[in-house]
Length: 505
Image (cartoon, rainbow, N blue to C red; front, side, top):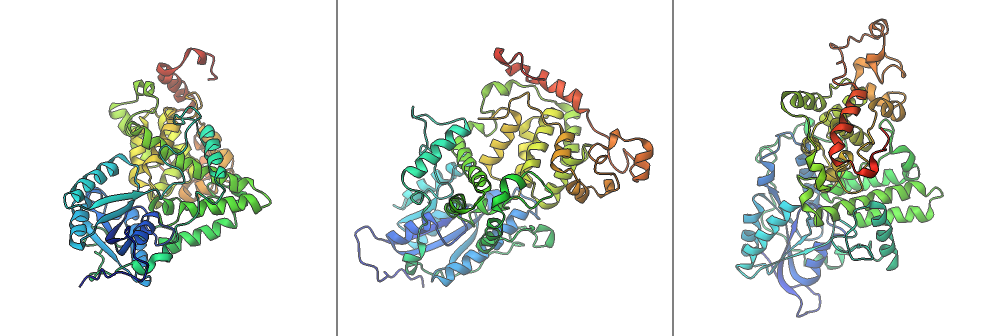
């Protein structure tokens, strides 16, 4: 029998008899805005997570992200049980399952955290309408960002499109209320005795949902709240050199927390507090400040998506939709070479193999590979955006779209269209000893650190001594960078402004 008896907290006219917390991309039991609101304002609180069948049906059976969610859900269920509650885990369409469950529990309100993606907003509107049919409400809270929507505006009251101006306004607002005001945690434990257990605590198996539970589905990082905490602890010992180490793919420089931020197994408020603490106390503040900037970039892209949902499928700068990209069989062939890591440019290929094999790609390499696809191969940025969305463990619509439009020069605060990364120069600078390249392209390992970045420039004798046959052991370049650069400048001429006529080539 489902219990909804009141707790020992003082009675209040604001207390709801029963509420339901709908976990989505916030898979933690601490510092959780929706969970805290539900507990504070309800006598009995139930919790639910739904494996969304409408999303899962389009994923491959070995999708690593499903494994990550599954492991995180199991840990979340255990933690809620320790607190006196439980986690109802369902597999179905949330538009049907949430109203059905809310009605079964006689819930007055369903609490959830904001989601800013267009499809999620449409889903929530449908759920809200269906709940209203039996006098149940959907209340959502801000949780996955520090500032959202219209919280950071220019002095003229408009939204920002340049990151530096946004960052300065973000920091000004953050510090105006005191550094702990916007990052203070939600003390879920204060009202944890209002959690209620549900009779059925079973979790659908991965196999029952059409997914494999094999080792090739697993990530190289730990899942769940404990996994996020472990990674954060490790990173804080390295944060002082983050600004220098983050650009080198063979170095342990990043925080590796992006997938945890994506699924909410860590709290962004906690991360900002840690970053701020390091800025104040660590002798070398530049690393912590750089990492804080990355967290602010995340807020910035969420804000852009919220105010400009048209960026999903279209250029932020509309003029850039006039660009004519490669098409037909040639485009398909070049795109396949890029996807499969056989462009003939070692750093690009190693990066794509890292993505395909692990679901992770180093941030510097995301820029290099994106720029190569767009400005060397002349392929529509949307093709690459979709490929990353399918394969990145930490795929987040706002950041992925923002990053690809940055590379394509079509987004807000994007790189100038005439800035075109040279893949060889990038390789020589950021993987000088070729440790990263050799990890994913062992067939090139006998080439020297100088030779390996551009194998096609070496003599036949050098290649033979290294055991490399271009076109067999490793492909020849699918395109010449210098020629591609000229073609790209011509392609982008449709958006070239008069004051850019003397832009560097």
